[in-house]
Length: 162
Image (cartoon, rainbow, N blue to C red; front, top):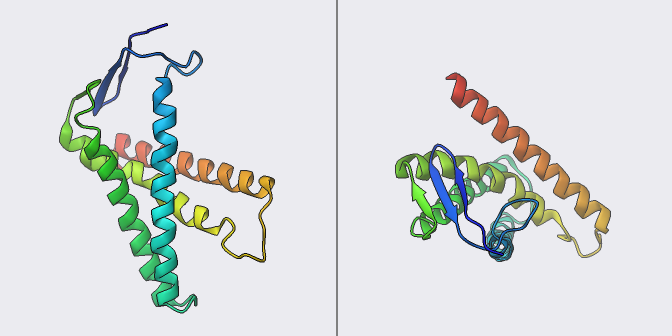
């Protein structure tokens, strides 16, 4: 069954004429694309962060903490901007304000990666410590909570002019 759905925010308007998941009203094919994108992002971030930690001798110092934090921040915003930039020609999107989508959208979306990159890296990082499904589940829920709270506070501050 085909549906037409319009999604709108301050920066982007999307019109989908695709098969939709009945309870979320999201095109089904976007679920599969999202999974592939996120596997790629987190695999590349793990590779980069492991190389950086090895360069510091796997020791936590003030310098290594600051360097890793800066790299995570830069990778997060770069990932978010790159994804935002690549969807600009998706035929179902009409961009209300390209500049706002690139700047605000990338920064808010980047908040997700700032939290998820280090937490994803921790899963099975030490071969002697195996994670259970429950531990991975709790980490995933913690990421979701941190991202939701962070975005809510950031949006509240943006709307109130704080």
